[in-house]
Length: 340
Image (tube, one colour):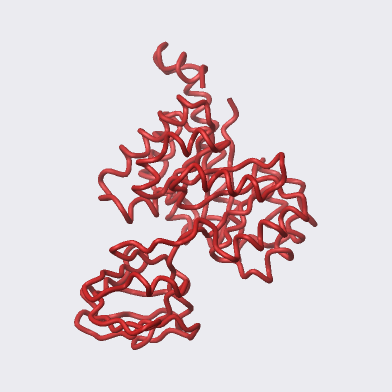
């Protein structure tokens, strides 16, 4: 079994030299994250990649996710500070932040909790007025542009956003055959995406929420492959349980005979550094031993200091896994791996 490498393209890698370097390392799929791509830029991104590479492209739908808008550089919200939340597209400051889509304000109530990014600020809503709300900072933290937001109670949003629908249509026009459904929560949503894409399209269901975990059997059955996004999953379950959820989802995907990929923080230190930590190398090794079919790099290749170096590290880790699998595993482990 060949372990596949999926790379997210972004500001650090939408570049001829980088794309050609990634191709030389054998990247199997390029991911364009629609959460960080303007609708008007989708066609141009596809054309840029196609200009320098024949590697398949995956359009990763933004899905039913709440995000904050752009902010002035990076701002810090202090505990006790009051912040005005708005559905208007405006440049965020310490006093005013955009949340989108606007429909999130339909579920906000006094007492609702708004958590920004993985280690960002935590806000508690005190009053809602149409498409605006007053909130107080319950826990200090940084806020950066276009970061994921978790709302409790959760907002009930469509599985595919208007941007997703437009991008799928554009992708079909360019012959794109790979699509990822973010926050997959129902088999019906997988089927809807399949119906919008070309008939031979490959649909990747991303399991990254508690609801997705609860519905994973029908979701996995409906999809062609599965992607575990550990980052978003960790926003809904305690961090210490994420490794066990990962193992359980991998086992279930393998029972359904669906390829399964793992994303988020595989080589997070290489966003800024040239070499990873031993803990990251160990994480990749254990993930491979769990029985995955591929590894996904996100920030490492989208905004990292050395996208090609990050992929080269993954290639080295995969080769070490393959050599070890051939010579040092117990017989029963070798049988299980060869059967995947």
